[in-house]
Image (cartoon, rainbow, N blue to C red):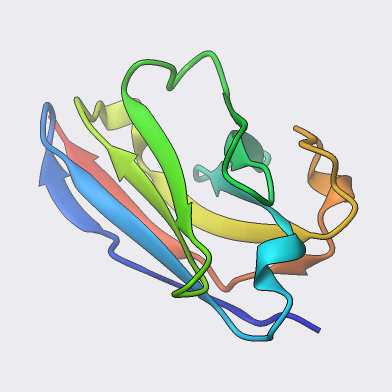
Length: 124
């Protein structure tokens, strides 16, 4: 069982940066693939970025490549999403997700554990 708690969201101007954090409970965090998804108002939840259990592989949605970076610290049971050059279209609730068997998946259904989300608002 894994519990996830996101933090770090807020209001930022276009071109600015934010770093989201996701703190996980449980002693097996280092065995889980982790990912960030987001959901904008009136839209479906979409994949943003993912990272393998070791941190050796990262993968991104095309819309955030070159601007966002996912990382993890297994000693702290935490995964991060550094977001740079933010755009108004990045405005959404950002969710952290985890699963031991996700195998670096981009698919929402591959992840069995979810946080409650943190709001990111980018003003123009």
